[in-house]
Length: 243
Ligand SMILES: Nc1ncnc2c1ncn2[C@@H]1O[C@H](COP(=O)(O)OP(=O)(O)OP(=O)(O)O)[C@@H](O)[C@H]1O
Image 1 (cartoon, helix red, strand yellow):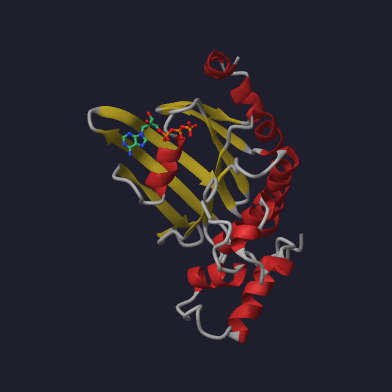
Image 2 (cartoon, helix red, strand yellow):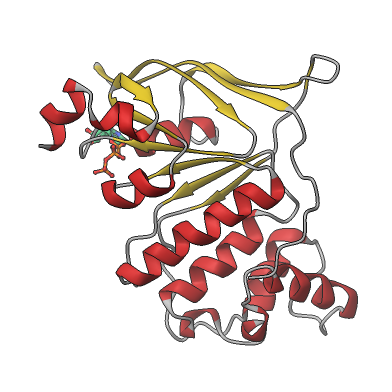
């Protein structure tokens, strides 16, 4: 994987302030406060139905919630609009869909109609972004023909174009074997270091989380505990849920 430091983040502070979500009369998330640092991988864990995806969707503004996200430039203490990149767990793509990686990428990052002849400058830009994840050879491949791991790399390339202030990831589950998931964590770790990036990841793989996370947050509708992997894995709440 080629990574060149483009200094994406600098010194910023991301705070998720008092997120609450109700579905009907059911409280799904209650008083969620999270502080996310540049150059760190924060991992959300919790049992099925704990509200992890709901929290991601709230941060992405996709579902109704109370609370907010603040993004402060610590240089001059000004609040700014946050740019968020997101990679879902999986996307459903028809095997035969006649869309190439270039088409998919171009549709996200430009207004140039993808059914017109390829725009050379845009093609080169996309090629360079795919190169970060060593996936540039797939640029003309049909998206439906990619392996799970290749697709994940393409989605990561799209999510960091342009460079976000916060990258939100759902651990890949479908179409990727154990080695593929490990590779995913390695790539994410390298990205974090090279770009000084703030990353929030939802995961079910407690072993990989232990190895790669800087901070772990255990939620079950509310935050039960947070800290280093060691601190959280030794917490009574963690033992009660996962042992
Ligand atoms: N749109 C919705 N309307 C009503 N209830 C919902 C909706 N979306 C999710 N829920 C409920 O909210 C709760 C939290 O779901 P969520 O998907 O956020 O959990 P999760 O921690 O991501 O679970 P998993 O680990 O199984 O993916 C669940 O009880 C779910 O049934």
